[in-house]
Amino acid sequence: MSLEPSGFVVLPEAIAHYYKSQEGSPLNAIVLGVGNENLEVAVFRLGNLSGNSVIARSVSVSDDLIEGLTRFASGEALPSRILIYNGKEGELEDVRQALLDTSWDEHEKTKFLHTPKIEIIDSNKKVLATALAGASEIANVSQIGTVKKGYKDEVLASSAYQKEAMVAEEENVSEPDEEVSAKDLGFVIGEDVAQEKSQAFPQPTPAVAAEPEKPFFQKASPIGFLEKIKLTAISFLSGLRIKKEGIPGAPSRQVWSVGLVVLGLLLIAGFIYWWFFPKAVVTVYVAPRRLEEEITLKVDVDAPSPDFSERILPGEVIETEVSGDRTKSTTGTRLVGERAKGTVKIQNGLATAINLSAGTTLISSGDLRFTLDKAASVSAALSPSEPGVANVEVTAANIGAEYNLVKDESFKVGNYPKAEVDAVSLADLTGGSSRDISAVSEGDAATLEEDLTEELIEKAKSELAAMVAPDKFFIKDVIIAEATSKTFSNKVGDEASNLKLTLTLSTKGLVVSKQDIFDLAREELKDKVSDGFVLRDEQLSAEFELTDESGSEFELEGSFVANLLPEVKPDELAEKIKGKYPLLAESYLTSIPGFSRAEIKLKPRFPGRLGTLPRLPKNITIEVSAER
Image 1 (tube, rainbow, N blue to C red):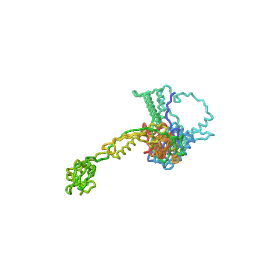
Image 2: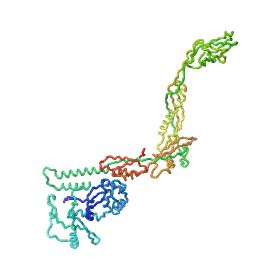
Image 3: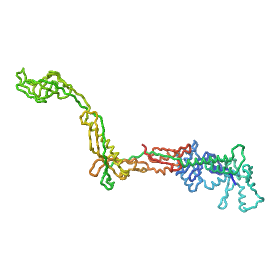
């Protein structure tokens, strides 16, 4: 026997209908269905359904309800009454207490005229609401009543049925007056039941008269995704068994059924993809808290183990040799040129001969100095008018054109008075010249050596760092370098436009255990780490300088620097923000200490209300990064 469902009952609307029958006025409330994984929210204003929504449950029921109510955000205030159903009594009481503790005024999109009243719908009322909804369609029942009999309540559709129910307890077996056929019960054989004329069932007189209202038993009204799939599948199976004559040329019922099933399968596939496959990357940017502690420590190559109290760490020395060359332009200058030369006549007015050695100075009237090229002997004067004379070659003491003097220039000779001994140029003194040239200065050599040394030390750092094992910490700022070879292309003072230096350095570096240096840093900073923050190894850095070296011990001065980040547990955070809209998730993330901003990347990004974070926490990747 194949049966076709004729309709279904929507629980929120059944509850609204029930409360109207009991209270005598249309329901104005929020009906909240509590499930294991979802919450179903329906808003009724004066008995009319304003909308309903299904929200995946998270840790906070109040946050989930607020999320659902934001979907109905409008200028009107929400009903100040919340009815809870569909859960165990203990669970419903916990939900009620959680909602009572919620501060509704803090949320802009959930406006209530006053603090909402929270009520629990027990299982009896839910059964009565369902029975009333079905009976209102079948028998036009508008109200129900209960009669207590022993410990058992019987729900009656009308007062007319009460008497029949009581008689049925005494005589519950009777023989039919005549044989009842299957057709009398509404079944047909070999035909479509839909073509049979519906039989009129006797309608009992309702116990309480009520104003006519729209039948609550709805037909073909969508109630949700899964209910649609179920009804479509049933219709398809029924269509395969029951043939129905249709309009000639129109698609058969099987064609329509197949189309609906295909559509249903597509919807199921889309739902599965939307639920299981979307992924999200949530990057939380926080402002790090900087800690710095100055410290003096020793690295002892011969120490067997660390001593944190004395700040002594065992270490080792690694060595490498680096070489290179560098060229720079010279900045020094030097004056070069030729000296003026010529011949002078020395006149001796003394009564005795004089002997002049090579290099004797002759001073001109302009205070320019010349020297004798060779020694000379000048005879004594024969008379005051006839002095002794001698011709000698002279050369200017310095270079320069200013030493080019004209003929008959008078000179003072050595230490002799000019009135007794003098000299006169016999011809022009010529050949003097000068010019400035580029030359190597002391500063050029020193700067070039300093620059090349720094370059080679950086090269040595790279080579030494490559020699360090992953579990070791290389103190890169402590490099001991010694020049083993140094060659300049020119000496200081040489004429040159460029200076080249070739340098070779022997370098040594210090290496300690990475675990030891981090443990020492934690020991020094442990009292300064605030609650809610965590000290991670990747956020630690150390800067040291060598202050003293004595045998196997190296004394260092420097500091530990730590950028503290908030303590965030990615798994717990993903669990709390799963299924939420990005704005609500970001609002929740603001509770993280030091929160600055958040970036949420959804892949793929669905439009509208489907654009939530993944429903599965494992599909949410949480990253915490320091704000720069």
